[in-house]
Image (cartoon, rainbow, N blue to C red):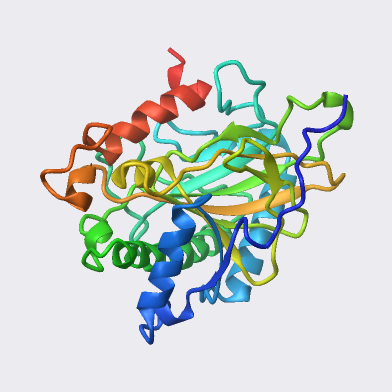
Length: 322
């Protein structure tokens, strides 16, 4: 039966952009223009000069590996909450109604202040769940979250400049974001499971922006404009970021949210560190604010919070249990 196949990536498919001049303010406009062009293509971008220290990434990986190596009954102490926080076991996500369940398992957490508290005012926001058997996980996970979140803020400023908008346009309501982070574990995938079984099935990301820190294993595949699948391998020293559905909607399709999937045919375990950036739940996603009051977008305005609740209900079976 074999694995789902993808061709090798060519250099033009997913650009590598050094965001240092945007991050330090020394020359932001050329970086903004490069981000704008890439977002109008496949919407995937390798980012170097991101500023996250290696020790933060390494510590997060170490904690994540320790967590996933624990027995399921230990991880079940922090099983996924109604607010989408905690451990989501293998088979707990399905990206399309007619797809097989994903092989991945995830540990998910979100924004909290320096005291560990956070607003509890939305269906996708609530107390983070930290495992007692891994006491240093919280500190290492939150360090990654904060650093990756800063990268997302920098990129959102770049997108605004690329669209000739005020630099803080996309960040006006981001004081208490709906952002989530996750450690995602992919077991080795047996060839005999066939080409329709995935670590995570074909999907577009629900929110505004995804920041991904891959390991060295690979397996991510992105669908190009002709419908073919191409590999998006790890590149040392980079993060891979991609436009999500909400940013595509905010720009009325000018920025592309592109289908992608994971096929872990390496024979090794794969571990990803992920930040899904989203602003406050009340943030109105309205293309008229981007292109002007006389512009007629293809989709009506919707709040970030309402859109995410709708998408999560379709993807995660636990949210529909009585």
